[in-house]
Image (cartoon, rainbow, N blue to C red; front, side, top):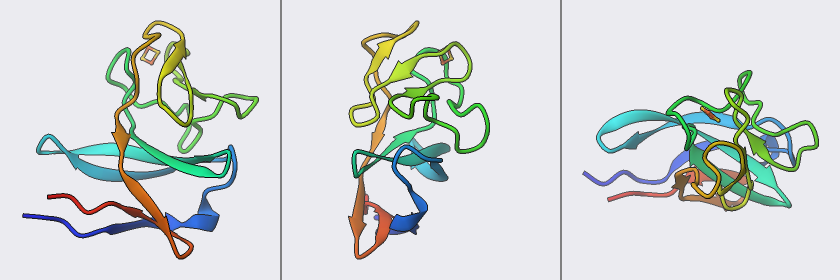
Length: 116
Ligand code: FES
């Protein structure tokens, strides 16, 4: 069955390099944790699962950026990801990437794109 667009949050809830918004998606038939962040004005969303070991990235809820607010960082072993591409640029899974989730920012709100 196809799912329609689903509201994740208001655009204003995602500040530049700030806390991410956690939500859940259906992924390969299971409910999986995901998150959205804003970087250089753009919103990106990924499955909340490190490319190194399948654990969640945030060291405390919503904390995905490093101290400089330049990269996403995994709390477990420090894998460092480009926010706009999800590619790991430093750490044990360098060259691998986060799983992207398609979202749309429309009318001041952020939606999970319809599937199916
Ligand atoms: S689990 Fe993320 S860097 Fe190892």
